[in-house]
Image (cartoon, rainbow, N blue to C red):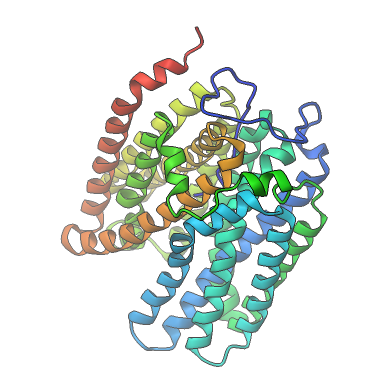
Length: 425
């Protein structure tokens, strides 16, 4: 999930401990803020670079001809660090100076990426990729917790919606670019290009003026020992965010698996070309951009909650429709629907999560959600591969969609009474 960040602390419905952010700027438009002009472009380019690196390493490992297990190991290296470091990364993000964390972690990632381009064997490739992912486990929650102070509590919803829209484009664009670079220039050139994106993010971390953590008061307020599940304890206390989080993870598990069979549905069941498959990814990204606009216009917390829950159901409906699509044009309609709903869910849920989390706990909450989402995605890949063998591409899409709709309805039922408490009196 993209960067969960927050909305307004001044909203009377903000709920659990939505603390005020130091340095909140409420008058100037986002793009007039110094740090926004630095962070947003740098993070967008970095997301593009991450997508390039992921596909390049996948192609590199596959080209080694050692079978499926090295690919599985590569995916595990990507997933395991944010899971194992949930407690440590969240504690560090909420306790220590954000600038130092971002500079140290991004600097290590840059160096590891440069070394990765010259790695002589797969063992070193895995080790250096692990360093990059460990850095990611620390930078993710640190950026997330910092951004409310950068843009001001009352406009984080718009910021995260915009960032989610960029992420919707960065994924497919980076994957396509990575494949092209690997084919035309080879692994080394492609990885060095990603190293440049890390370097740009390092420069951005250096230039950002806003800081969080590191003060004597924040360090003394931190717990004496690191608790792995501290972030989950924070989320568990919120009757709205808790069912939303589990709905998100359950949707990842049910819907994420269709990524395994998506290419088979488009190429084999709908009998289309590779170029048209690429077009479907672009169309889904366009849907994501529309979803980010919808999320940005959902400033009130009750609206954000409803948009998120509706998005869960729409994702399910889109998967059912895509699985039953009689032709490629109809499939594109549902692919657009899925992309739109996915980005709207990411943006609105991210805003609600941090908006209803005390400022001192935002890093822990973000790290916990990220780790749980990674577990969900790994489960989804395994489940999707199995379902594809049993039900085929169409059956997998339909079954996943029905499961996602059931998850959405169940989460809405659990949260209904708490949602009514958010209504203004």
